[in-house]
Image 1: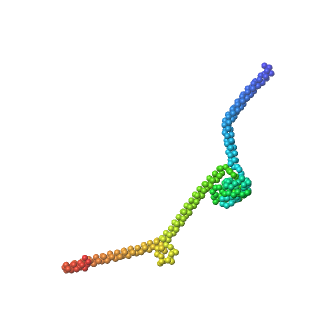
Image 2: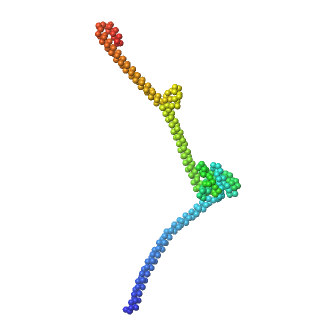
Amino acid sequence: MHILGKILLGLTLILAGVAIWSTSRTLQVRNEWMKSIEGKRDAYEKSIPDVGKTERELFATRSQFDLLMQMWAPMIGPNVAIVPNGNDGIVLNGIGPATGIRANQIIHVFGAAQDGGTNYVGPFKVTVVDPGRSAAVAAWPLRASETANWNQTFIFGDKCRVYGSVPTNAPETLLRYSQVLLAKDELLAAKRDLRDTRAREVDIANEHLNYRDIELHGDATLEGDRGVLPDHMIDGQVKAIEILDEKRNVTVLEVDEIRHNLKLMYDEVQSLRDRNRQLVASLPSNDDASASTDSAVGE
C-alpha cells in the first residue's frame, strides 16, 4: 500500500476513535443533564404546595398586622410631658380638647425610659380636661412600689406618648400581673399576721415561763417585804419544799426516837411484870394475895 494511503487509513481510524469517544461523552453529558432537569422538576413540583401555604401565611400575617395597626390608632399625643399628681394620678401637659382627649376616656400612657426606649405604664382614666393640660388617674389597683417609681427620670418625662387604644394583650397582661401581685400581697400579709401572732404567743409563753421561774425560785426584788409576804413568795416554792422536807425529816427522826423510847419503856414494863409474877409466886399461896398481886401488876 502506498504510504499516503497508510497515513489516510491511520487518520481515519483515529478520527473514528475520536468520534466514538466524543459521541459517548456527549450522550453521558446529555443523560446527566436530563437527570438534573428531572430532579429540579420534581423539587419544583413538590414546592408548589409550600408556596401556596407560605402565601396564605403571608396574607394572614399582613391581616394581623393591619388589625394590630388599627388597634394602636389613634395616637393622642407624642412627646407629652407627664408628671405625678398624688398617689394614683398624673398630669399631662400639652394635650387637651384640641388633641381629641375627653373626660372619662381611657388612655394608655407610655413613659420614657433611661435607655431611650419606652415603658408601658398602663391605662388611665381622664378626670380633668383643660386646654393644654389634663389629668388622669390609674385604672388599675396600684401598689406602693409602683407609685414609688413614678418619677421624671424613669417612667415620666417630656417624651411620653399617649394612645387612645392599644392591643388588648398589654392591658390584659397588666391586669393579670396586678391580680397576681394582689394575691401575693394578701399571702404576704397573711404570713406577716401569722408571724406576728407567733411572736405574741412566744412573748406570752416567755412571760409565763418567767412567772413560773419566779414561782419556783423566788424573786430577789421582794427581799425587803420579808415578814410581810409569805416566805415562799420571796424564796420560791423549791426552797420552801426543801425547808418542809428538812422539817419532815427532823419530825420523822423525832417520831422514830419516841417510838424507840416507847419500845424501851414497854420492854421495861414487861420486865417489871415478869419480876412481879416471880415475886408473887415465891410468897405463901392465898387467893387474896394472888388477886391483889394480879391487880397490882395490871392483869
